[in-house]
Length: 388
Image (cartoon, rainbow, N blue to C red; front, side, top):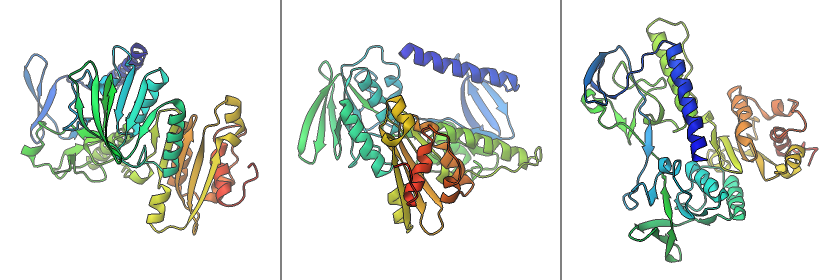
């Protein structure tokens, strides 16, 4: 499995290399550092330093897994997400610290191949950034699959002196000790902004991120930042869009293009979690919408009532839609179930076009499909459901 996953990733990487050549982009391998504005020093693997001049510099150095001081990653017994992707042997038992997207994906994967998995989450519920109903559904599903879940709990210390790991976990009922072969700690992302020359240039950073405007421009003209080093969501599709917007804006400012790009709406970025059941969401959660002062129309359509889900033998989950009661504005959608990561784009596009519930109800969705659930949830929100 590991060999196949790395093979898929390598083939995608080769595809990017091909596109670089196709578009006549020079790729310089090495460690880059901005020595001064428009001057980049690149240290090659053999230690040789070459200097390059440029009119514009885009910082896209990505991020790495965050480490906790009381859980030092050693790469063997205490691992991060990178090590989790390439473990040479399957662990019999695993402790997963945290329950964000990456953590629940690995928890699902290793549990599905027979590893006994325990999730330790500091917050009161797993996947805490998701809508509360999604969290409850995933927890119910994970427990059914055999995953042990501990919420309102935190790993205080880890002992690796034995054959495996012993984690002391603080709970509301006192401390307990968990034992496992491996402990996975993947608690967020840290931006790679050290030692690349930002301080000497005077580039402003805040909370470990490079401060940029709507088009990736820093406070220093000609210096830009996109992806995990900038304040937007640390997602691949966000970084890709930021790169396009940044490059198009540079071309526009240089008068090499008449197309001025549109700034990214970070409130309409879809999030996807690739466990099973899958999770997909965009826009406001119910809690956030109520706190913002909206009166709401909420509809939820369970996949148990879906003909396509029943035919596929997977009726787990639901689609939840949230609308503003006053104007019918589509505030958010939250999905959990089979293939929902392929369905969320409808909401993203609809919100982009300022679609209301009326357009959704009056758009014919094909039957039988999972996507019908979006329309049916909307119908339930407005008391117009006919199929449940």
